[in-house]
Length: 335
Length: 201
Image (cartoon, each protein chain N blue to C red):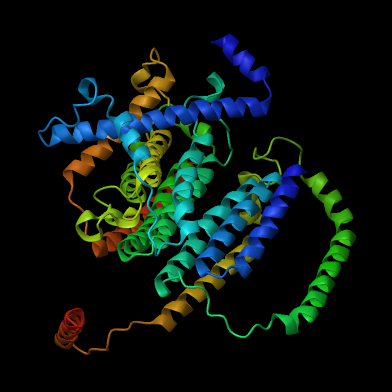
């Protein structure tokens, strides 16, 4: 292992970054495929049915079958669509979803090269990239040139802007306590107390806004089947739909990683169980958060749109602001 | 240096596309590309915090609202309504003014750059981008904002607040005035009925 790290350190920078990116891309795409299967299985069990179990043992080849189906399907473009933007939108979604992984560290920077880039303003960079994700959805919905996608995209724009504000404020509480914007530093500040204990209000706000930001149930008004057919991706088919689909799951994975890094202690072991390596703890925490996500989806009904907006602006935002003020006062008096 | 030229070409091309695009949404996409390239340009100048803020504030918030309004107000699919082509008449004066402005800018930058760079070099310690004490880092940016430039910063905040209050006042509340709670209920009921009737048209 040490030999491999030394070889990696000696190689030119661009080659290291290229290799790391390729490996990470492969890992993330594979995780996406099995996260999808995991969701269908868990939802099946929660609804007392077996879930996918025909393709391969326990349905393990289901993602491959789905991928083959999506690739072979015809790629339709509606006559009224704006061709350029209609084709561009899925790529914007996918690009922003993947580029976040350039700075997410999966282990302490002291213990090896676990991140592609260790950015000092890491958490701000995360916010910046995720805030670009809305363009894929809103441009895609608009460019489809029909009414349901347009409604879906307008909803998503309003929803994501509203909840992003509270999300950023929930980050600020963590930043004040940790005293740094680098993700590595934030995890190191959680050596003893994980921030979901000291920042419990911030954590609850983050979980709610994270679900809303990724447009998942109970905040999935962007693609509310009962009202909008399939929302912003009604007109998309084949591989272009697949790209939106990948982006959604990769975003889920991203917010799970952010929750792990900011609130669940990152790669720090609980109760001093350092026998298990940090990366395993990190993955366990991410998987737990993903499970929680799926649990929410199969439990809660969809919210009504006006209540969603009222909740975001009149409840979440004031609470998040108060949390920031309270944290600031606490840190200022404690020194 | 290679990065500078590539980004420069992208910046100018996207800016041109923004102002010449026939469809409003294309302009938004052009502007988005411009903002992202500008953020990358800030990164090459070690303005890490500025680059990130540029994306969060302009691309993540303001431009999304542009897109929101354009997508809602018009179908956005139709090109701009083209009026009389005024370009031939104003082309010559516009080029003269633009060149004069450019010349003045180059002259001003040339005169001030000697003093500015020598000052900046002594003020900023050399080191990896983004670490504390290095030019452009979050730490230094925050310190400058909340100590040296606190008054301008707060005044800017106040001006923005005035603008927000102004917008709220101008846009106002479109519900008809009702003196009592009973009247207000009647007004709300009639408005609901009007909406329902509109739907049955």
